[in-house]
Image (cartoon, rainbow, N blue to C red; front, side, top):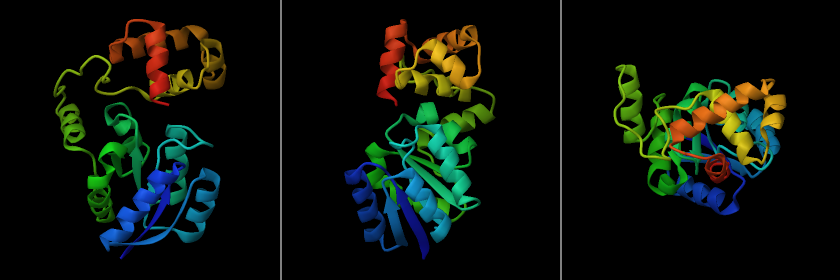
Amino acid sequence: MKSVYILDDHDIVRFGLETLISASGKFHLLGSSRNLADGLTQIAALQPDILISDMSMDDSKGLDTVRAVVQAQESRAVLVVSMHDEMLYGEQVLALGARGYVMKESAHATVVPAALEIAEGRTWVSPSLRERLLGRLRGGRVSEPEPGAGEAVLTQREIQVMERLGRGKNTKQIAAELDLSVRTVDIYRANLKRKLGLRTAAQLIAFSLSRT
């Protein structure tokens, strides 16, 4: 029976995930944490076979959280459960080393099957994201995104800029944090608007806030 540790800073979500994992009878629940720093300490001590982690924590945001938990898990499996649109983040999360991505809105039905899948060394994504990934491997886009739904993929830099816009950072602050020129950040902002089907800076900021 594979062991599982859960990391999520929302008490209701964390309790729900604990209940799903325990009730399945397929896993041994080692524990959980609502704080990334405490969770990383427990992961190092307990070495769970599977870590189920939120993508954004109060003390760490977005892909920074994914990097931290993947590093802590070493070669063991990470399943990311997130409120964020998988078409924006799914590929990046997998590229960082996670083995699966589940959106919270469907977690009640998918988190146990996903955990079982990655426990066998496979990868779990939704059928729609799987088709998009296969389409990219074939060298063609599967379908055009709806306005605001995201392009086939955002680059890591574009996601970093979007995350910081969602935290209220301005262009100069983002440039300083990412060690980029202001003009380069402006280019990333323009790319984000184009890919996300947004027309104005205000729409981009509003979108970024809703995803952070």
